[in-house]
Image 1 (tube, rainbow, N blue to C red):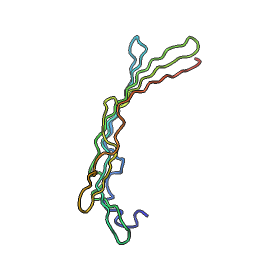
Image 2: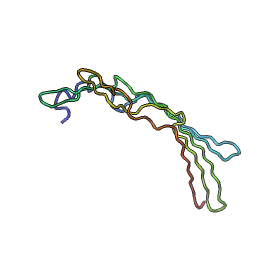
Image 3: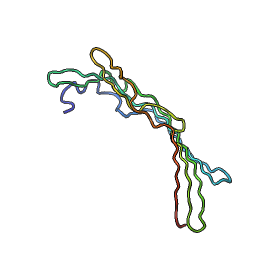
Image 4: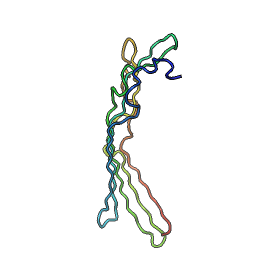
Length: 153
């Protein structure tokens, strides 16, 4: 059980794993005059997730114990800036309803910040070749097309 061994609590203070102390969000939309087109945008900026180096230590009471070498938040992943944009156009269908055409561009700035690391583990003799290297990244820029049909008035 976690916490029974005092080694579990070494450097256990600090930021929580998904703590992002700085977050900024702005959203807005506008009608393009005389076109029926609506443009909307969502801009978000987050500070990177905290992480810390760890080590596996051989103990008498446990075969191996992972212990944090630094307080959580001693290191951070890269900050992320995401811009999502939507263009939409509604077309009336004479008494039937309406159809809405949508184009979404997600991560329009094509930010490539990492989401997680391959390894945070340090050994007694050396730092692993994969220590602190990114494992997953935010999804690249992509576009989605959609159609929404609304029947009736």
